[in-house]
Length: 107
Image (cartoon, rainbow, N blue to C red; front, side, top):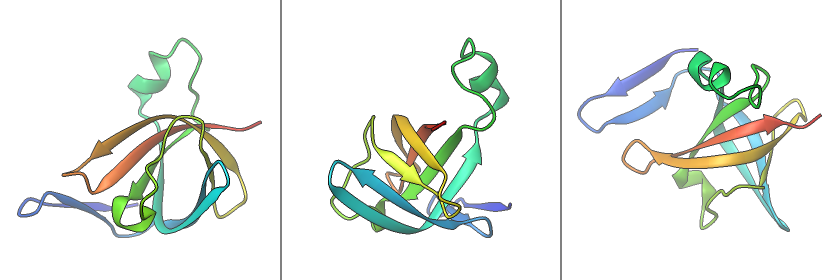
């Protein structure tokens, strides 16, 4: 997967690896066409005392595709392979263009 950083607008653009996911919050379901699921960093995994592992994901969701829905803890993200993840924390990043949702793979 490749990412580019445009220093003029400070926006990240996914060149490949984006996939369609379904974000569920209560009874509200949102389809996001250009979500990017990335492994957590080694530092995040190793400093978590076993909470995180390398099957968990940080999902980058474009704010522009989420409509009025703001991701929050407890939401579910289901990827293109029907693997479900529980959102544990959310950050708004890159000039408020993306939500970064740290998510635990459901077992």
